Structure formats: structure tokens, C-alpha cells
Length: 225
View 1 (cartoon, rainbow, N blue to C red):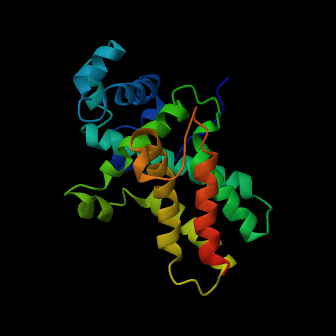
View 2 (cartoon, rainbow, N blue to C red):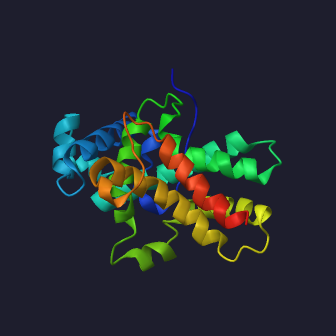
């Protein structure tokens, strides 16, 4: 049974909010599955429309191009992680405990299943790991940044940075640590799965406990000297 969670995203990411219609939700659902299956480079709207048994025109009514669709999906995930952090740190005053919960959510957000029928969080997480940085490693990043397309990520990083400052008020790089913890979680999972000589952690059967332990080691080694 689906629950009523609607993720709020920058309106410039889409032509029409896909969360609001059955067709839009179908686009989200099948784009996640198809990008995971083919990889982003091989993915296009023609293949998506064929998978959906629809038309390319119907997809273009929601997204200008496949880059904007990927940016939408990644932004959805950023906001989803932020939502989980809010829920799991509610009424917890100890900032060290909050940071541990944040790290756990960075690593295991895909394991949360809110029964949003059109979003497979586990597969979306795989896309974030494999394709996520492609949304801002582009020539258009400055223009898109000015248009607010990365606001969800900035808010997520600020939320974590605020906790870091509560742990160590004179720590000089709270935003850098916050963003690096998120990126490191995804990169180290990717390395463990595909290029194991680039990491010291092992990931088997979607068990990311070693990644979580490593992130805690880095974070608290820096903050609790």
C-alpha cells in the first residue's frame, strides 16, 4: 500500500511534475529500471517510451531531455535522504548520535521502503552510486546552479554541517566533511563492487556495514581529537 510522501523539487527540473499523474509516475518507475539496466549513456527517451508502451512525445511533456530526468531522480534521492535524517534524528539531542544516524542513512537509505510504488529506492541507489555525479560534472553546472537545481543537495549538506559544528564548534571544514561523507559512501560502495583495489572495505549481498564503519572512523577521528 502506497503512503502519501511527495518530494518537493525545483520546478525548473521538469515540464510537468511527474509525481502528480499516473503517466508521470510511470515515467519515473521505468526510467529508474531502464537506466539501471542500460546505463545512462545508452538510455534515451525512445527506449523509455518503448518500455512503457507509450510515445517519446509523452515523455517530453514531463522532461526536456534525459539529463534533466537524471537530475530529477538524483534530486529526488537527495531529498529522500534528507527526509530520512529528519525522521530518524527527531528528538535526539546528542549530536554525535545524530551524526551516526546520518552516516547510517547515507549508507542504507536504499533499505528504507516507504512503499512509494513508482520508486524502487534500492535500484535508484544503484543509479546514484554509478551515475549520480554526472548531474553536476557538466559544462552547464554553473548555469544550473544559478537556477537552483542543486538546492536539495545543498540543504542536505547544510543539515549535516550543522550537526558537525555542534560536535566540534571550531572544526574548519564542516561543509567539506558533510559532502565528502555522502560522496564517500557512494564511491566506496562502487569501488568495493567494481574496483576493489581502490578501497579497503568489502561489500557483499548489499551489506554496507564496513562502509558505515569506515565513514564513522573518518568523521569521528577528525571531530573528536
